[in-house]
Length: 476
Picture: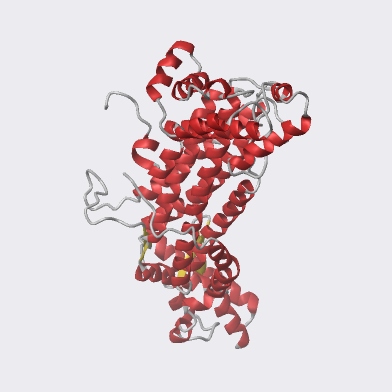
């Protein structure tokens, strides 16, 4: 159908894996798994739930009768009860015990927590893959000198590989946050209408330990280590805010990378990959627009703004719960994951296909290097008996003149010629040119790259060696 709005995150950007994770089918299958876990736990703790009823629920766990649920929801206006009804139609013997003691948040909130956890595992995989791709790039170009920039003004040289480590350092911070969030995952469990577990205490005839055990058993059956010890009807919405802040951090890092690539592509030093038949512009056929990097920046801004949604929701909840979170949450949380999924796929694709132009890099560096060599030139002249203060003044005057030639006349940088013609320095042009070896001005950049890759990156790649992919899917 082309006559209804469809989200570009679904139709153009996010991966099939992430799209399925936030699909209705995944959600409702998880609901049924939770109902089975509840029934099993209640059976094991002595409630009148039979194994035959559990087996019937399991037999229809995945063949969801959507048409029945949808028809029922049009009638009763309640999604959870509609699916309880539909499940009961398929499982007539188990119908009396489906959802026993639970509230809508038992399936809704636990499912949301499960989906965010599984989505974060996809993000982790892509993040580690990306770090591995950038590590290869950094190692390959660790020795290639390039002009560095502060305020986007020419500054002391670095290397292409060292610049890549700056992108990676931010991703390592993101990885730490992802690991932290994954390390704190819990389920809501079975807390009841206001979080007091009163309905379950009634079912278990006042046995507090069985009520506590019910929580633990549900979590274990769903593959989790624990539940939040206290809650209202819902888990704290600060959990959503924590997840989206994590995603916002990844978006920030990706946006920084994309901005650097866009600037470097303008300088013709480094370009993102460009397909053989790709069209850069509808009007200017020669153009190679950095469209993937621009898309990263565009999606990243969306995620950073989207992170405000759960923050405001968490801040404005009333007492044990209100329902003004639901509509917002259904949009903001999935879309943040879908967007970051797309961002990381694009980032991997761009980083894995970066094209470096060493001659352009060298040409620009050589034009600026005379200015950066002046400190060394001055020190050599002092060693020859010159006065440091006088030399400094002469270099200042010559630098201003060379800058004028470059900026006002469009000429080449003639600073070395000006210094060679000044007797106060006592140096010939060949002697000055001998000082202009770019590798002499990059400091510890190559060693920093090697040390960083060996000491900080290699342990991470080894830890997650089974997670790394070769390529990431990039859609339209």
